[in-house]
Length: 161
Image 1 (tube, one colour):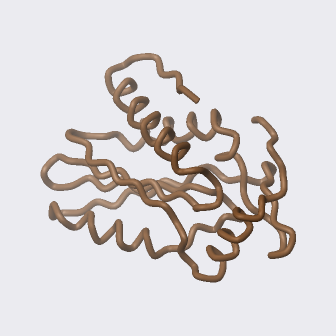
Image 2 (image 1 turned 180 degrees about the vertical axis):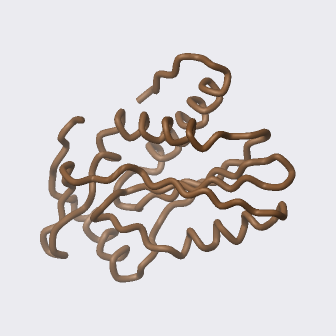
């Protein structure tokens, strides 16, 4: 694991303070996937992405006037599976996730997998806003989807960073 400790830049500090005070300042990405997605495979992909991206191995620690990214003590990216019976119930999960604070002192990303009745899977990533730029977030989601597709097709997976 690469160590990437540093103080937050002023804009990152402001966004983290907003996250801590407002309780929810997150970026949500939602992907609809046709077919079955195995929880075990998704766990492997999340671990691979976290291993490859230095900032996902960080957490935000310190007092409001001394915030910093720290590598040591970062948890694995949380993965929750929500089984829903009706096709549109995934929207309730997304709304719930959007309004739930990410504890940035533990991890900067969490993921939810929602298998639906119609054989579609909804994959939801929640990023803590100060941790990554939007382009990086989009790249990580694209890499995760690519890894999932290649893993499901029994190919060796390597991530682009």
